[in-house]
Length: 255
Image (cartoon, rainbow, N blue to C red; front, side, top):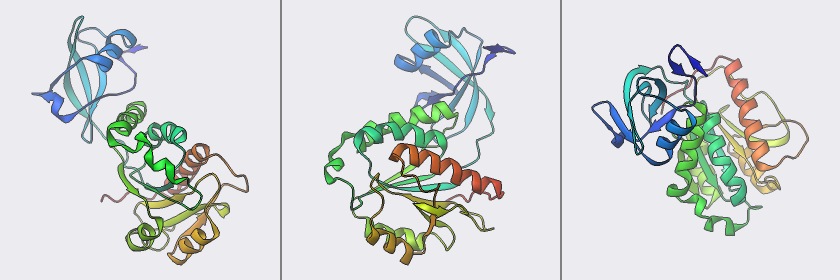
């Protein structure tokens, strides 16, 4: 709908190299979206943003049959920085495709994707682990949420070295949690900083993996006794976990 000369719609994301003197010229999909879905006219205001940069109010400077020029008019305040990092056991490719945009939309600061005992190793051959494939899906999620910050992605074929050598020393006590049915729902003490949540495969973490997490200082977090599909569990856990942190008024720490 139209309100005070602007359309209250999702954000058009621009790559940094597309902006020259405050103007970006768009063709292909984003141009078609502005012309055919938003039906924007010259002089109208849209929401825009630069990937990993500021959010803007933008004005349609010109539009014709081939391209649209957007002028960045006024910088807008950023969304709050995500407070949750996610360690995710590599899901099935179809599930991973669904998750990429959702994880960006819900707000994950860093995403570690790792092997687990109950993960089929053939999943590592998926083209969806190629940045050229998953980056557009992340951008889709960011545009939906109105954010510009891409999650930082780390792929790890070996879970144990990742957890023991990198994650365990990288997050203090009370900042590391592993999702497991029946785990408690108290994910935060009073300190500030991003928390790490580890979400396993649909078959769950193995007993050995759970012992490893416990030895590395991870506490358990859960939503009850139900076993959920990976994409359902992941988004539900992140929503509840993030809300618990927000409810305690914990600010994010940049890093």
